Length: 457
Image 1: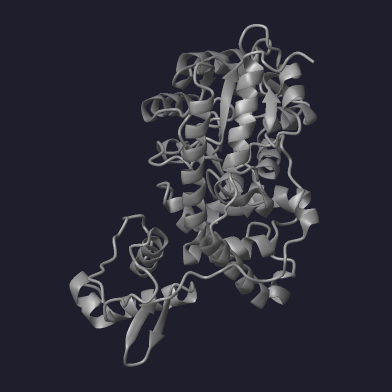
Image 2: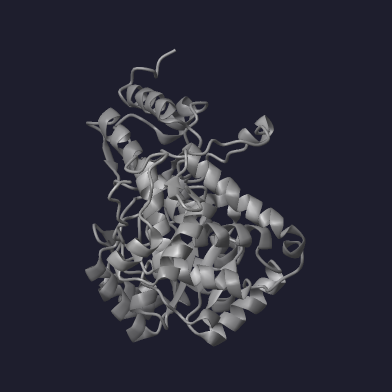
């Protein structure tokens, strides 16, 4: 028996889940290997100063994840790492990928994939109930899981302000329809998320971009724009901004929040990447809660195919308005997706997916930094993309044509620019289904293209 003890991360989870998570981490890292015996439950309870039932529940949770197995009279032992089994993947599904989106890297660890599939087994066991019409904003169990997830970013709103919504994009449509009407003005960053531009244009609203510096939008420019344009809301993507990768630091967030509170201007906080950045600054929902519609999309931190977001309304009345609007536009988010995410949050799989995406993104940024050394681009260690400034003489349209077929997503600055004419920038996505080898080859080809070595012929 190893002298193993769990390491707590103080992430707000119940102790039994933290112990199970610690077993998970240590089996993933190799600190615990198949056949290792864990400490007896009573002994571990005494050492940690916890109830025996907490330890028993932790070991049961670890066993449900396939991490350990218990034998009466002998103890609890680490199981061999599970292999991914089941029906063969449909190759027709593998081809489906929208390279115009900013994609997270896809999990490839067998143990993690096995845990993800175990979540599907749990959903399957509840299949009939999940095929019913259900609450527009999610069942109580799903909203409780959302609260548990959001609390890791320091947000602990009342449950009646939380809605499980059908993806960030659909939620944005709903929130804008509550806050504004055709002809009204919405503020945003000078370079912003293309989805916002599409939604605002389709709704017949006006979009005005605000100047930014290295810390984000300028508070004085925001205050001036409020006075001049009488906007109905401000939209921000404050963490690992798409496409520039900029994260607004805490001090600037406080300044922006002060302006919003002073002018009582609603904020749509698109926190798509908030869980990807370790130790991210506090969300605006904690700084100006009365003004903030917080949209915590799961597309980037867990998976886009889920089409889910955890949304926090400013108050109970706003939450009711959101529910009524979503009922008209979407009826409800998919109960199947909600049940899967709830299970993954409860058993720690969601956190493992997020950790994988975070680590893999950092590794891919290292590859980009090496292969594109000498070129000018904005990047952040855990971002899914870089924001590349093209060298003189290289046009963004022609570069995109050259890169076609290399399995990498490129998007020109035209799609993002709100303030002023588009410049020669291109967003290069480093994620998706492409492997590290494929990324290495694609970026090497990109570097050669930027150097002019493939422009002839």
